[in-house]
Length: 253
Ligand SMILES: NC(=O)c1ccc[n+]([C@@H]2O[C@H](COP(=O)([O-])OP(=O)(O)OC[C@H]3O[C@@H](n4cnc5c(N)ncnc54)[C@H](OP(=O)(O)O)[C@@H]3O)[C@@H](O)[C@H]2O)c1
Image (cartoon, rainbow, N blue to C red; front, side):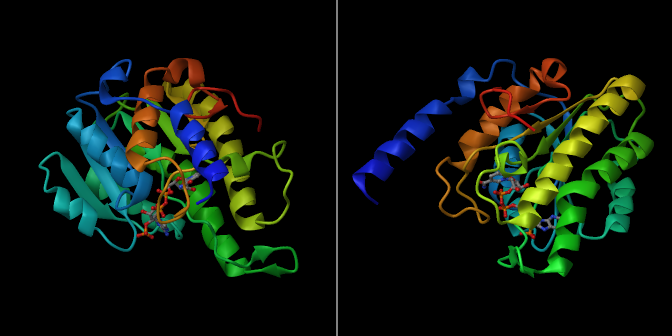
């Protein structure tokens, strides 16, 4: 890695620095549903929330080995492939009558290599629409229907700056950009409906460039991004209906 790159990465990391002790209001004793929790950001969020004394309902798609290794009595793990919306009905078996307080819609896919104009994998596109976007509506509906009435307070949708239409200067990547843009649109819509009907705050977050399976060249450690996201929860009321970065800066839609 060249010197210029090293300096750029150092500045980027510094911009988002935070320690456990700095989380403004520790989120504790909450029941939290996290999707796509066996890897990357979802796993880091699971670990941090457990450390702060919360109960986690974690979903996984293909593997659950990393979650099982945590061996934590406050962790309930269940399988859900969100590429099929009807699978989300299965959530009710795990959350029925449990007071779910927070949902983190984290599961997501990049959408494969074929997503540029004239070479689009439309099967993957359909899958990604379900996983990255439509799921967040169905999960909200399911939790509000089956979880203990009145318990849900906040929903965070893990989006991406790639979902910003105004920020788009690079073209390409129709699947990822389009589905994250759709997620943002649904997030805004849910923020209006759920605030009015259920007093639930909903907002979208771009986690930045995080080093994970999806982005092996990412700059931020998942633990750090997770902590920043947890910190945002203390500001849910003010962030309702917004699209923000890890430092609460408003991003353009
Ligand atoms: N890393 C970044 O730089 C970055 C930047 C912006 C936004 N994000 C967003 O952050 C979120 C977390 O991604 P990550 O970076 O932590 O990557 P990751 O490690 O690949 O995590 C994505 C998770 O989504 C799950 N998933 C994939 N297909 C699924 C399906 N059909 N049903 C349910 N879950 C499914 C994966 O499970 P399996 O592996 O079992 O399929 C995995 O646990 C994503 O929404 C991503 O778009 C990441």
